Amino acid sequence: MNEYDSARIRETLLVGGFQEADGPDAGLVVLVTCVVREKPQKKAMALVRRYLREGKRVVVAGCLSPIAKTELEAMGVAVVFPGEYDALPGLLGFSCPQAHRLLAGPSAFVTIMEGCDNFCSYCVVPYVRGPERSRPPGEILAEVKELEAQGLKDLTLLGQNVSAYSHAGVDFPRLLEILHDETDIPFIKFTTSHPRDVDSRLVETIAGRPRLSRWFHMPLQSGSDRILSLMNRGYTSSDYLGKIEMIRSILPEAVITTDLLVGFPSETDQDFRETLEMVDRVGFDRAFMFSFDPRPRAKASDMPDHIPSEVKKARLRELIDFTIERIREKKQRFIGAKVALLALRNGRGRTDCTTRDGLVVFLLGDYRPGQVVTGKITGLEGLIPVAEPT
Image 1 (cartoon, rainbow, N blue to C red):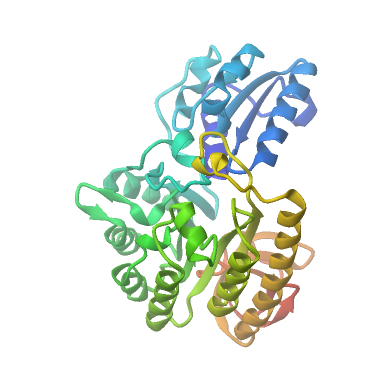
Image 2 (image 1 turned 30 degrees about the horizontal axis):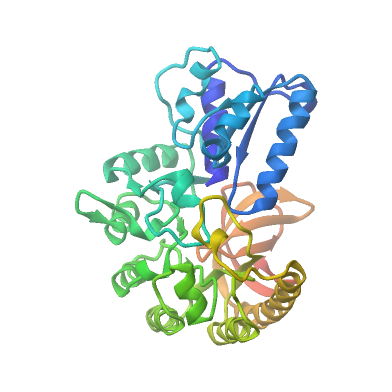
């Protein structure tokens, strides 16, 4: 989402009369911020202070802007909220031409919905991104077609809760059908899906359309039903396993990735062990792992029995080691598979590629960005598959 927002801001400023500068020569710096974790929030504020000391004009965009608006404006910073980026040139005193579309390379993001209605107790997103809002399907299709005309090959649909998309009777499976059937884009992916919103109709829609990704990013967060309830996640570990079994029964080749959170208030050793057990049972292909940080306005910040920092660090280290070993074992299954690959960047005989199931692959050879290649996965380099052209 931040990559998409950054691209929107860049194009808006260029059309609005600005010129892109090379690092230290910039007179204006725009920071696109995240506050899901405490560390990037602190880093953003440190960068604000640094650039102000250097005499630069600073704009703060993204999720920090509504949380720290008063403090930032008192520092002399311009603040622009998510979804209001087209107004940025005017905010800075420049006229802005009519709205425009993003320029695309072979790979691009398109936001189909924003906001979240789930209010997970650890999460600040509903407070900084607002309630769920889905864009009209015709507007999305028009943007995607324009990007396709510019050479788009790899499309990622974005939303804080992308599978909850709904607009005027068009739900997410129907939107996927429209985008698949009315374009020729080779690779169509999406992220992120709340497990509760993934059902058999969605999976069957994907199974019937070869250019739709077989990749599902479904945050588990915890394997403990007690902790899941405190998190207000709306499912149990059994519910989650049922979703995984359903996906794999329809799409045996499906790639499942997840988010995992340790050290939630009152988490016991038993709760943590149940998370490890779920990781073992599911067999994820990738995982983003974090320890709990209290976030402003999130309900969990006021819960009792916060876990000591050293315990959170130890659990996170154990979870990372445990999960990575199982991911490595899981990825062995790709060796020997023939897949379609999209070349994105060249360098030193390697090209970073993305398969339609969301895996990053090293493709041996020299290919231009946007070229689609058929390859065979011959091994792993760390956790990353290596493919040779066939």
